[in-house]
Length: 396
Ligand code: HEC
Ligand code: HEC
Ligand code: HEC
Ligand code: HEC
Ligand code: HEC
Image (cartoon, rainbow, N blue to C red; front, top):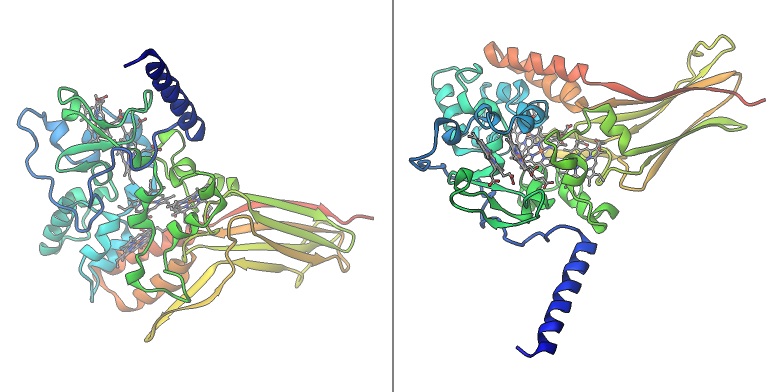
């Protein structure tokens, strides 16, 4: 190679590294991609682990991964992914006209080995029993996202951003690292119903990936993982977590001359707020008298929700008042005879289960299934919380 060409090659490479570094600082999705069919359901059995692997490394139990990945395990255990084989799910799977468990387990306990374990428990009449459920009880577990054919898959190496097949002499026989792990599409197979499952008033019942795709956050390269797994933490906080919900909203609460005014904006949720059909959010205000007591009959509210129902013709939508990214809702309370006002936001993460699904099931189930649904119903009723509670004084 002539000197000029060599120099140009070096300069081009430097510019390329600089540009790609500026754009994302990370390898692009699709570089060393995950194998085709990584999320094809049902997943295949892992098969035999290499003969020289120890007991912990060949196990699919999250507790075994914990021996070497303690922090990830502690985070995951506190997340809803770890609780996905929940009483509300299992109660439906062992109920009177239970469906094929596979149609639910594909997202709630996706490994083929989990399906086997759950079916064995069902065959013994012990589907409700956590010890009999074996590996299925782990829900959406480490191996479900990271193992195919006993091979470990993970994101680019944290320090070097290296992708591709690791050294076969390294632990796990070398991890295969792919930028696809940091891409929103990784979450799609469970957080987006495919078009073939139909739509309700033009939108699939679960439409999170598509909502994200149309968001300004997607355009700016902000992925699901950026918000739900910052620093690669395995917490996946969502609508059940007050701090997480607050982080996505901007509230403007003011004592205007004629009224108390509450404006709520979806300032940092990278999809509709809320994305799913099960939560209900209510903006509320009530007038206060001179002693700071609520004045009866003055409470006003605005519901933020995608309200759906189902009947003999299938699903229907009552209304959809969710806030798309950047959008706002306003609640106004005229002062009337009031001296002040109290303003707040109520979040019911499990409203649809609490007030619709579980009440219906409790009427038709008995035995262990009924016990599980009663437990789920109780938990769903308790998950509510309040945000932005403030008292305003009427301006003179
Ligand atoms: C006996 C200890 C041990 C057990 C058990 C274990 N791992 Fe690992 N794992 C390691 C070590 C050590 C590394 C670092 C490998 C490297 O840098 O090449 C690693 C790397 C990884 C990586 C890649 C992370 C990175 O550094 O890029 C993933 C993903 C992973 N393990 C998942 C799992 C899962 C899932 C389980 C349980 C099913 C598990 N591991 C069980 C020791 C273990
Ligand atoms: C395409 C993936 C997918 C399938 C298939 C699926 N779910 Fe879910 N399910 C989810 C997700 C995601 C959530 C959490 C929703 C949210 O908060 O956005 C959820 C939440 C739930 C909840 C509330 C949380 C809990 O565990 O108590 C229940 C109950 C539930 N699903 C039952 C079922 C049942 C029964 C089936 C089978 C008929 C099923 N699901 C099939 C993805 C799925
Ligand atoms: C729902 C899917 C999912 C589950 C369940 C899951 N992970 Fe991960 N894991 C990911 C994703 C996605 C990333 C990469 C995130 C990113 O790049 O922002 C990751 C990253 C990792 C890493 C690399 C961390 C680093 O700092 O480089 C390790 C190690 C790991 N996971 C281990 C585990 C273990 C152990 C469990 C169970 C206790 C587990 N994972 C459960 C999806 C999952
Ligand atoms: C194998 C299916 C699967 C994959 C893959 C998956 N999830 Fe989930 N996710 C679920 C299920 C099922 C639930 C509901 C668990 C429950 O409560 O029963 C859930 C719950 C959640 C929640 C909590 C929702 C709430 O109501 O508070 C968040 C946030 C979340 N997932 C984000 C992600 C992100 C981000 C990714 C991609 C990195 C991802 N998930 C990948 C199945 C999956
Ligand atoms: C810009 C940050 C951001 C991005 C990007 C983002 N989310 Fe969220 N997400 C939030 C916040 C904040 C909440 C809590 C408020 C809420 O419930 O909508 C949330 C809530 C959720 C919930 C709880 C259920 C519900 O009804 O709201 C799920 C599930 C979820 N996100 C999944 C995802 C998935 C999957 C992606 C990518 C396709 C994604 N999120 C992208 C910030 C984000």
